[in-house]
Length: 497
Ligand code: NAD
View 1 (tube, rainbow, N blue to C red):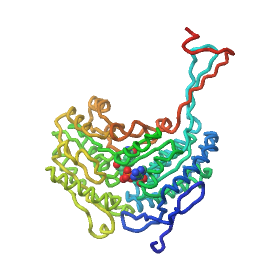
View 2: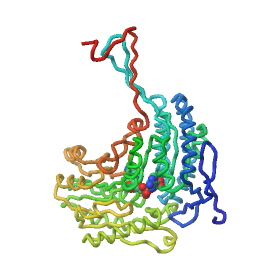
View 3: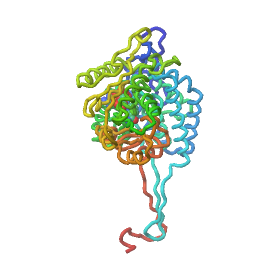
View 4: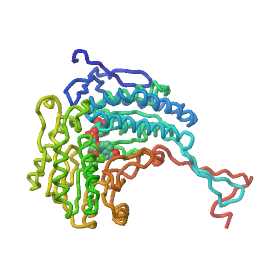
């Protein structure tokens, strides 16, 4: 164990416990290499204990009236508000994004928690007339049981909040496995939920690797619901492994999001949108703009001005207010991002700026990659097709809106999309034709709000949505209720003909 490094635990049935193996793993700051804590390297045994605790707690929690469940969430939201600065600073240290963006991540969790708490007094069903006399029909939402929540590191407070607050307000209980790169934030999230007064066992936390912990959760017979955000490779495996038990599986996976810049666009605005969407969070957002599809009449202007803007971005520790772009998450990410620079060069794309690991001065302590722009990119190249998940974007030249939409849609993913144009007709065509779960008009590809559905089409997901009302559809099942007060047996489709 490193000297002075704090050791953290799992939370199972309301108790903070070590892993039975006694083994631990470290959380290391991508900005400085500092060890931030040690966490239990759990395995299937801890998942089994957590699932049992969640199953036991479900028996009581499902019967707590939803407005009362909401009270715990309101208290949790207030705690998030009180701890916003602390959590944001921790996030910048543990995950790397710059402090204002880390504050935005926490704010998203605050917004989501208030929103879901409000659902405690809605969770609306329907009432509808019966086809038979003296009969009453309604539908109600019912909780499902224990939800396995598996999250990535890139939105380490926001994404757990999307899933966990929705699961809880609907009356489910949770086993939460955060990403191994951000276990400290996962722990703080659960500590604050406990402080908000959730009954023991309603939310359980199990740290550890995807293979041992994640897979056991996916296969566990007492965990009927799985909400997973992460890579397409792992998500596909989750779906396959959950299939034999016919589990409810929600997958939110990768993206290769495109911004279309038309010849009538406000170029200042478009460039600002591209820089923010492509390089915010060092390009490690699922909604990052990793393709910029530019009308040929403004292509040269966009390329020149984008390179100038990107070269002004300051790389560094996100706690420094001068920093625009922080590190990437770890060595593996740095190597993957650089491998795509080599792929792009081999494919014949033109490296306009960046394309290298940044190591000068303080940067040598962390994982930093120079913001990178490729020009002259063909839509079918690998750098224009595959998710790089780093500060790299590519410019693709197109002749008109039809080609722009064809190129924008010519990928396997379908998460976010955007068009900059001043022409309302073009904007509405884009809204209709872009194959994506989200379309922005005159804004970049990021910036979702919590009361709208969030998620992607095609290989980004499997048809469910996070956030807003749509999240409730995943975390509940509908029950149709028929109340016959006629005093006789009335047969639907037969006795009313
Ligand atoms: P990842 O797939 O490597 O890991 C995600 C989570 O799954 C982690 O907690 C990990 O430990 C766990 N895991 C790993 N192997 C597992 C297994 N075999 N069974 C069960 N769980 C397992 O993804 P990542 O690197 O943490 O995140 C980056 C990816 O997430 C990108 O592809 C990004 O686009 C995607 N993402 C998508 C959205 C969205 O809403 N669509 C949002 C954020 C991130």
